[in-house]
Length: 298
Image (cartoon, rainbow, N blue to C red; front, side, top):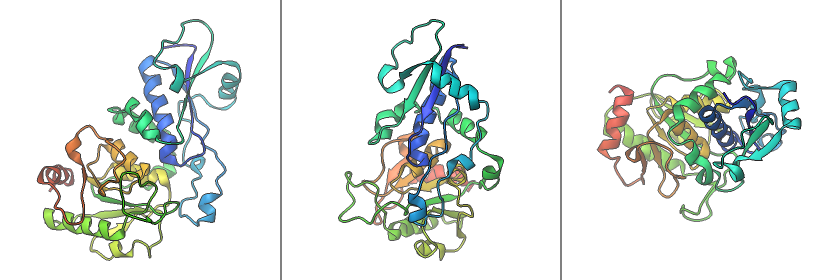
């Protein structure tokens, strides 16, 4: 155990998925070097979700506790009196071994956050998931859907309608509901099974009504982001939005993921065959379906 070495994640003011990367990097690093982790500050004042009338107001501090992480007055004392170095600048350089208390601070990038830093947690999804669940409050965990299912994540909220075609440069954009619908139909027809499908969305019932009309399809009963994220990680397959939230749901459970053409952010999973981009005119590859069927126990 590195007695005088600490890790701290500065989450920033972004959404849960973006903020989680600094926290997860800190989790992995402290585990590897034997450092002690300081609890992050989850509280952030956010007016945007209220103005946009989103279902989830993004008050993440209500959903997490500090667990075994150092918190309270001791955390504030350490942050005020210890030497600070920054992971993005000073790692993986060796930290001097001396008696001075040192905090390695992990921060998120405003742009291309995942592309810059995700490789630090690649292959560590079991550890990250375990730690995330360990700091999630019981109330948020009570609503987690634990059975294998088809997860469809429809991002609305602060995402905008596309002004042109969806190419690799198009980001923070709403995907067509018709695309989700056609992928759902393909999954049902190619697997010849009426499996449980759950829609995870910050949109209204009206916005996802074309999906809710199908048999055995329902929307998530919670409005809490972390509850939905952990539920998505229990899915047998995830039909993703072009957002980090989808990718985190896939990463935490190593869940096979279907993305719209040109809209997968990058590879989150250990096996490339379980991450595909599919257009409405294409069938789902049999190799991919075989993995999904095994997860659905078909």
